[in-house]
Structure formats: C-alpha cells, structure tokens
Length: 237
Image (cartoon, rainbow, N blue to C red):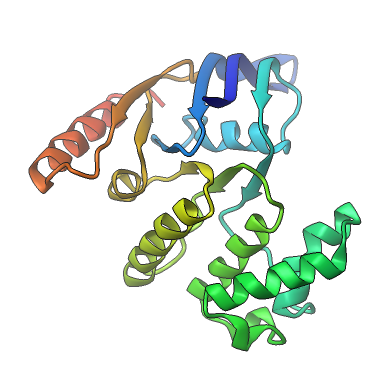
C-alpha cells in the first residue's frame, strides 16, 4: 500500500530572472513499511527532494500525497540550554500537544534505547552517536508514519556510524515505520534499504532503481555497488 505518492514534481530556484531547475517532472512511490535510500553525487537534488517532503521547501509544482512525515536533519539540532528530555519534547511543545503523555512516552523511549541515565543531562555531555539517538527519539515522538532522514550519520566516525546503522535498522522495523534515507554512502544504502534509488540526471527527473534483499551475499552486493558507482560517475553535475 502506498503511503507516499509523488507525481510530476518540479522545483527550482529563481535567480536574476533565470530559473535553475533542480527537480523536473519527478514521480516516486513509497510503500508502507518500506525503507528506501536515495544516493547520488553532490547537487543532484536528493537533499532538495527530502526538504520538499519535509515542508522546508514549499514552492513546487506537482502533487504529493502522503501519510504523516517527520524530518531528521544531518545535524542533531539539539539546544544546548535544554536537557535531553526537554529537547525531545520540543516538537510536542510547538504543537501544544499533551505534555504529560508525551513525557511518559519520551521516557519510555529513552529507557528502550538505554539513554534514561541522561534524561537530565545536556547535549554537550553526550557523544555524537548518543546525540543522534536522541534526535531519532525526538523524530519518533511525532508519531509520524514516514521518517525522512537526511544523511544523519555522515559526521560520525566509521565505527560509530556502523553501530548506528544497525541500531536504526533494528528500531525502525520495531516501530513499524517507513523511511526515506538520504546518503552519499553506498554501503550504508545497501545495508539499510529495501530499495536504493540512484539519481541519474540533472535536473533530477528519474532514478535508477535497485531492489535489495537481505539474502544477497557479498558478491551480489558488490556487483550492485559497482553498478551504482558507474551511474553516479556518469552523472553530468
């Protein structure tokens, strides 16, 4: 069942009378409980797409039919003067939703993710990986069906990043969520995704698509990675 359906999406920036198209007549569907990654060279439009879906960019043409969405940016954007719990509850405060129920839910998530000892700590007291876990909990607390993740692990060291990839995959399945994940890391995309979409052209108008099975062995995954790399290197960006 589709929970996201994009039809003929077009977006560009106006500059001194000219119109710089980033996305043109792009269509995309996401199924319930599906995890997809979008990869491509810098400037191909992948981050612009997720910002449109998140509502950050809203001057576009086309149609977007979607279930509820929550956005997790590359940086954790935790306020240093608020405790971890206060940071997690911020979206509910903005929406003026039930703070008592929200606090109860936030604490239960912190316990599940073994962060309950840090409820009253401040962001600067946590490691980068822990801060990203907190950011993920804040995203979960919106109770949205679709999670939009824009390169959330790119600033982390390799060991922490691999640990968080496994952690994310386990928990996004547990919470019965769908995901669109933006990344430059092809290995990350192959590990996390049911489907990998590769940006082909500029302006972005379609994707090369790869279905990924958890049953694929290392040889098969290497073949797919090699093909994805050849597509990205062939982009005219």
